[in-house]
Length: 167
Image 1 (cartoon, rainbow, N blue to C red):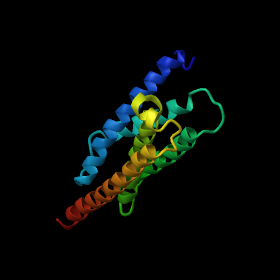
Image 2: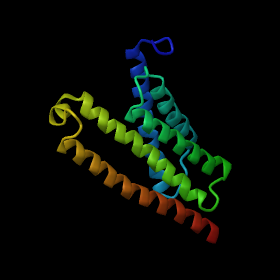
Image 3: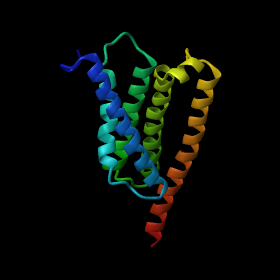
Image 4: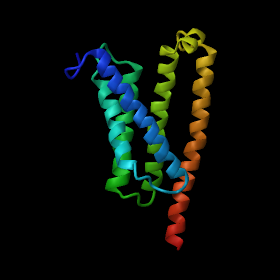
């Protein structure tokens, strides 16, 4: 039992929250690439926090890669919140926010790929231990995609600010 729910129900809740984070995070990052701040930004930050918090509530069996990623996500989340609300995206905090937002989405996508290879039969058959080539190729492609997305998000979000200041 976790929070009065069966482990199965709690896992389902965590998965739903994680999918919401992926969806809202994709919208937030797409808006950054276009040079805008999304109306979903605050909601995405809350959902991102809930993704990590619910991940920490699973039965503890020692430090796992998931826990390490959760801690990293929480640190990035604090950085994004400080940049957005504390420093109001002034100066280099604008880029700090964009990088944090992209990294938060990347980490959730990274975990989604890991979980897909663990839980989806045809993927699991091709990479049962997560050390096989199909898994490495999928994670490598994800990383390359996010490097490009991160570049475009930072450039778009910075450029929009520069245009606003010049105008």
